[in-house]
Image 1 (cartoon, each protein chain N blue to C red):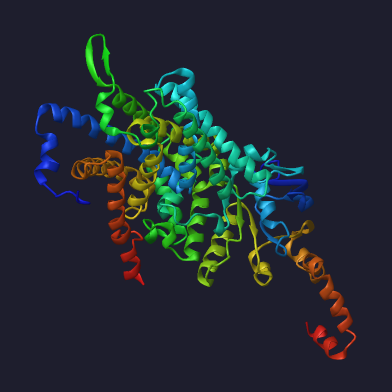
Image 2 (tube, each protein chain N blue to C red):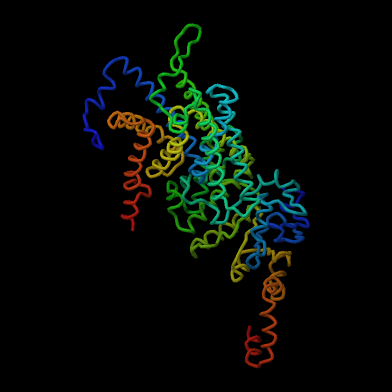
Length: 263
Length: 310
């Protein structure tokens, strides 16, 4: 059954760190079941947007609603996969412990982990192909494996929304493919996924919606409409105005002209 | 006098247990030591995995002026007054550190160094200004004297003799902290490992943090007579760091601090008999002596295991 509310609704969101604005007047309505890529240059506020939705950062203006509720109550619907750098990989927990944490939200204050929870964690590890590593300490894994463990934890949460901050950073090609196919199957189960992504080249095949962000929202919509030369230029161009000016100057020279027509 | 007295097995290991009076006296010391190690080990494991070992150090030193003032005002060394004093001083210490590093250009580590030494110094001044008072001995608060624990007053309830008061207090503190850890283990684990997840599933992470700080203050105050504010940090840090070379799950690290606590106490007690030194100091030395082989040979990330892997 579809909820009458958007899974994520952001209205006129402004966020700044120590008076430096990072996000400015962002409006966003993400529909249920979309697989959204968030794209933009470094420092465009992609992570900040995710963190604000997760209620880790409080906005200076505007609001975030999750299924029509304020973030404090809404974040329990969200499975969050943190950026790799923000995890303490030396922490004494095994892969299984981490995945079981995904079940904690359902246990309440005094609940204990049940057999069903363990079975669920088991299944989630199987889905991401990490079952053989269940008893490893999380630091003794490759980057791709670490990312898959957190994906399994998110699966175990059985949330309806998933936010991921650069899940493909430092991940080998095989793991990346595996993660993408899991993301697509999650989408088929009706989950809403928002993923911060770095690589323009793969964005088109991974996502069905795209948010172009550079402090402001440049564009949001289905990928065919948004993934255009013009809008991408606008997103990345803000920082590259000097280069584009140089490019237009250079365009007067014939050999560059040729290169431009090829591209 | 030689640096190290001759090693006499009978003198060191059997003599302390040779008569019933000695056994009852020394057993009280051992029980106290073990309770201190267990209590501090539990709290310390969480402090260490949260990367707050230095904060633990700072807080345990910073509560000293609170203890001194509590004693001067209330005139007793009872745990109630001491705990309140310690909490207030601990909070003040914490607040000063936070304020300095968020409102001035001083970095957090420097702020910590500044604040806790100045609190500590203030405490030392307050105490040594009152040395005329027989109950408040600076060296006792700084270093503790577990050997004097059997001298603590006895508890009697409706005519039945129940034993040493200091041990009872320590035991109750241990039970409180142990029960709290057992009940809220999941909340403690997840808020230590992943604050965002903890927040999103409705765990009050701030409250968990404050409770942990209170437990730290409580454990410090309770262990004061036995090991003092300086060595108590060793009791916080050593068990979990040593255990982490053998186990890669927090639960096992916590559980391993129990046998370690027994080893530390027995080892320290007999070491002190051998070298004729402070028992609390010897307990900390034993902890160091056990840490070194663990660090070198421990299967989980010990120096040798890393060497073999590469």
